[in-house]
Length: 226
Image (tube, rainbow, N blue to C red; front, side, top):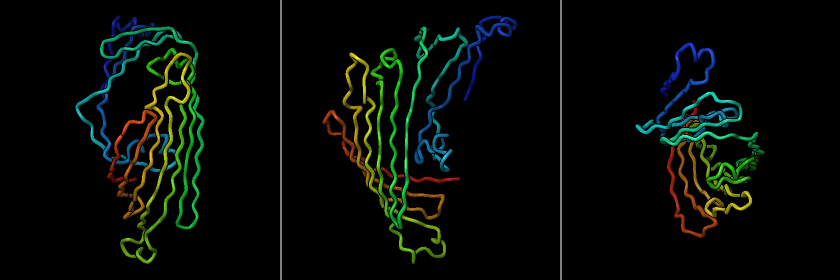
């Protein structure tokens, strides 16, 4: 990440007021080959995670400037905008579970997000977002195979159903985008040669409320935890 500080006043003025101090940063865009986003705090607080990725010569930029309370100033692609903002909040309610019985695993999660001031944000932002998933898995590797170098190996087949709607409840007068109401079936298999390395393959069947043919997907990936 690179950070540049623009001083539009003298150094002394900035020390006294901080009013003209602008901080601009850029970071290269990351392409994930496997383990996408399992290295962020939301996941690593619960389970170990790792990502196989590469940075490319495309950058994301952000700038920040100290302003009076309740003012927001943005600058993206040369478009500058400052506006007064009301006190708003985003509330996220979620729950998850995991249950194991013998060689069977069952897990799932549900999340509900509420966004204050969605209409003022614009760009089709919903007041509420809702989604859930349920996944069942079966450990198919026979115990008699778990010997020698494969003593700690494992293999599973799994079936997962996702249902999420990014347009669950819209502000008054704002139309829903049916493409935001999606479901997805995923069937796949995973093999752990060691507990911290996995090879995965799955087949996905997505659908949304538009009724369009979204096509089917085949995904291959590897993951490594350290």
